Length: 355
Image 1 (tube, one colour):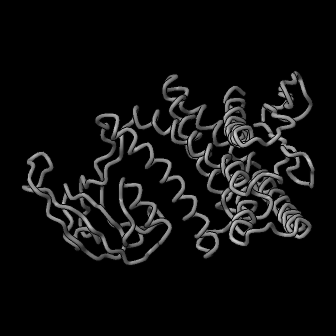
Image 2 (image 1 turned 180 degrees about the vertical axis):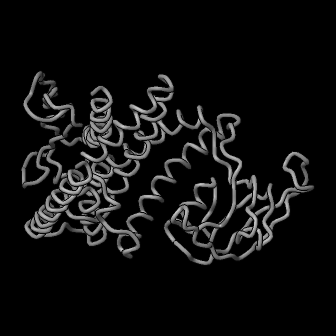
Image 3 (image 1 turned 135 degrees about the vertical axis):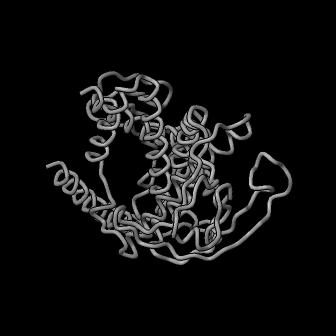
């Protein structure tokens, strides 16, 4: 039960930070905020400070930020729609940006504790495409089909999202066969086609990596923490691409709140046997993944989401005048209807998986 509660609070934190981003940038740009809420549902406590009501609500599912004139015409000079277009863009974009900031902070905690998974080969399997291409232990993969490789997960993700595709690998071979020898590394390139391995039900190159290495200094900590956020964003985009190209089914790829809470609760329960730090790292990893994913999903140009609103604001910026509010409202209404229908599908899918 405690693990499920932890999962719910985790999800609530991510949504709350998203709404706080909207709130902070609204205040900084002179937009009136009617109410900022922690939680959802009926109010438990509330207090009015200036123009804003600050509320604590019964259900720990994130929060909300209600702005003056956000969805309707209002003559109030503090109304959202009366502000310059750049101010409105900043307010809307702040939610996803704060999700990326939250993801980065927890990525720092993870990287500081676990290190970085360097893309350096530990071994090459006999008869594998990698061996036939001449790869050796100690080689460091730098690019796969012109996608930069920072960690060995980049290679795994590319193979997963482009199953069976021939790849061009760029790699570096250390002087004397070891990175400890110093000297200039030799840059090489090779082409190979992953082979299907039935045991793992996936296409593989036949390489083994050295695993996680500790980071050295603040710069590496910041660099690899930023990479963790980037990896979550790229994996989310790749997953969307696989769904659109029908490489994976939507019901297999998409998990809703019920499914996420169940998975988080399960992993927290399993990690609790290894101690408190293991639980912290598991929760940090979930916050990193979900916050970055929520950030990128909200930036998609889908009506009713932040990305849809940003799309119309960018059109206004280019045209020099806003879109017809009635037509824009109709588009967002249609988008909301489709979004609600999709959420019903996702919830049904979650329940089906549980039972």
